[in-house]
Length: 341
Image: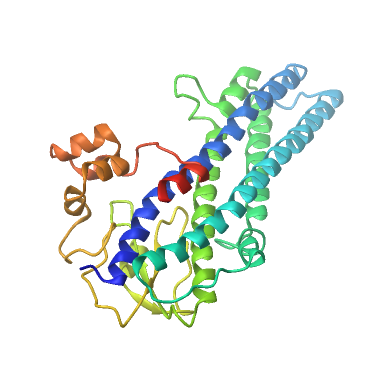
């Protein structure tokens, strides 16, 4: 008979698997916004550069003025894009914080915790998105920072291109990248990678803070928390070193611990029978590896984690490290709710 701690841990880790899909769904929206506006940006740059024939240091006063106007118009355009991105993430996270807090209460109740839990207020959950920083900045400041960093890269590419006597096509390739490389060799790809890191970390931040608000609102019930890291080849040393440790409520380390962090803190009850060490999906013997444990799971769950074809290859003996968590599957919040109802 599994203990309460074991039931909580297993449910939470499965929930974390689904959250990775949800992160992918949120990210899909954000990258979609960047991709949808990229063509407009490139069209603007190409059209304006065509009217600036001077290169190196041979720009006329009129061309210099046109260049400065181009850079200013780029700034306005991209600030607008990142403002939409910030509002999109914020709106999504406001809804998600409510769901996550509710899930944690339902999790404790279904695991057998004999107590009545209090739901954090709407204001407390909203503050997670609007007033609580992650990795040193508020979400709105991360969005502004991404816009400023991209603007600097684009402006530098244009100025350097003109100074070095590059053609308009050469400057555009530096910014957008090449078709041969699927446009992953241009500086706009850096913007997508940065947006991906911030988006995934923002979802982790909201999930962890929503859990924390539940724990804080029920401090008379939840007095300790256990750190659970994802045990795979991408786990950082800081998370691996904390995995399985139990902390007094209020003395636990902050999460996310780093960008793209997937670790979680779960409620831990001392008067419960202590199970074995915590693995990626639940308590298992200390010697059990992620791969060994996944082999014992149902085919459906293996396919949930790896995808159908990768799960087949995994069962045939192919190493897990080659493809874990790279299925590309995504969930909307509605799909996440349906999956866990």
